[in-house]
Length: 215
Image 1 (cartoon, rainbow, N blue to C red):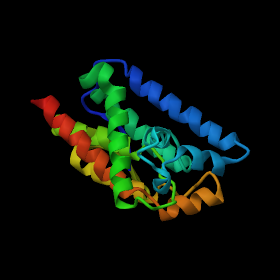
Image 2: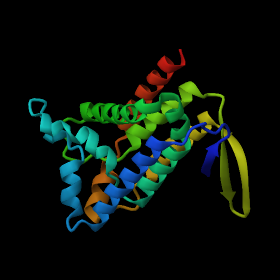
Image 3: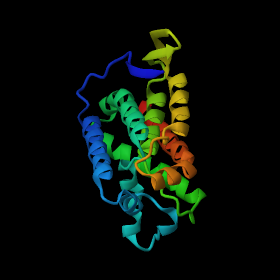
Image 4: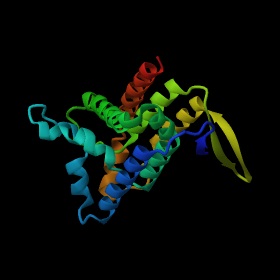
């Protein structure tokens, strides 16, 4: 099942969505060509045990980790969902979209940190920020439907799926999208430390922002 587009297209060119996707792709390319991808990930990913609120420099990974990804499936699924759902959100928030995106991602990371503050497993990926976009989208556009390509055995079709069902599908993909990792060590880290609560935190913040914007 592959989402294609919102049935109600955005009325703007998604400048900030495009910039964020390009930035994520650039960072991922640096992970791929880095002579020591594990060191790069450890430095810029959020490692809860290394957070020290008396040292502001250790808080940067709450943001930088959002632009790292553990593998091709990880970044492709995140960026495509951002493209499909982010355009209408940018149309609603305008210049505030990148700020909203980063804050939602940081909120998701913070919730994950609170649940495992002594963990040495790196937290990385845009899933918390994407969850924020989806949460706000659900609050603002619950009546929208998503044109979706489905393929089951020899049957293929394009159907319109309610937003609520598509959000459930997205969450399920997050459980499995770390299958292809940048390195064996990264695969081990991600396999044991998928930040499920970062999704919950990001979605919750996004939903609250969406409710505020709606009223």
